[in-house]
Image (cartoon, rainbow over all chains, first blue to last red; front, side):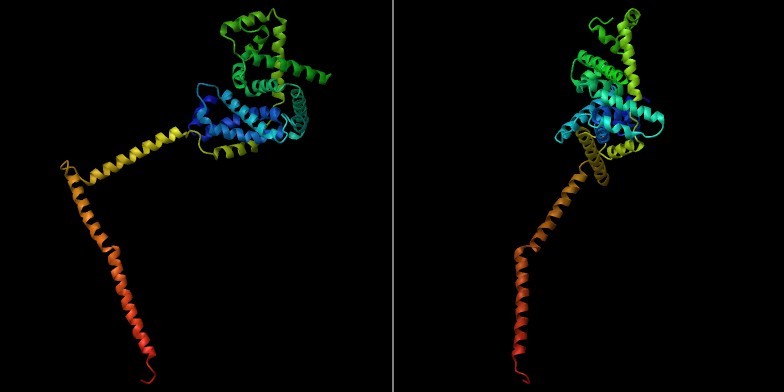
Length: 179
Length: 169
């Protein structure tokens, strides 16, 4: 069953369909939040977003892609959260690079992916907010560039340019890191 | 190829499958002669691999907690408009059932018989209420209360007289 079919069922109040959607999207959503807001914030916002998905299901239009709808809500929830937290000196990505190391202790493969996460988190810090968001919406949200442009309220060319610069900077900083 | 898009954006739109069929075919033909576009596609693939390798694996309890919180909140499909139309349907149904039961208890042998019967019942009830109203009037209650008080006073006086009489008389 497609995400859109599940979303239609969830819209009609089907708990099982909604659970399946959360299971399908949890990894992508958590990755997006983790690199956007930091590990600690991501777990709090994750729950808030799931509640928003459920309570706003009736605003989902079956003609649209569920991913675009879901990540547009996630993005707005994150902005609201950041605004609230900014009164408490919240910084975007605060702690993302520092706390990721203890998220998965264990064998060498886990250590390798932990190192990759740390490197990505640090490299993302060098991007502007908009560039970082385009990268994360594309790679974890799976949104098209048209959907990203709509979410950010900018022209398609701008969203594409942000992605282009994001990749240039990420590649530059990660290759410099490797030597 | 899509002439409206800058050359450097085409690899991104190609990878995200946002080019029209004609533009996609044209871009694929163009790739063999453009090292820049091939390098851009390589870079896009590298970014996707990096993001995949750095994806965060959620703890099982995270989704469970989120589901408990979200499914514990009111159901999504109930907007005010839905509630209004459902309530309207409910009231309509209740009215129809009530009317049906009322008509069943007043068989329509004569189309107006139930109505004249109802008028008679109302007149009778009205008469009984008038009588009840008279019986329960404030004046009637006052008369009864004063009679009771007079009797109580007489009893009190008799008791006082007996107590005032000297012993042995």
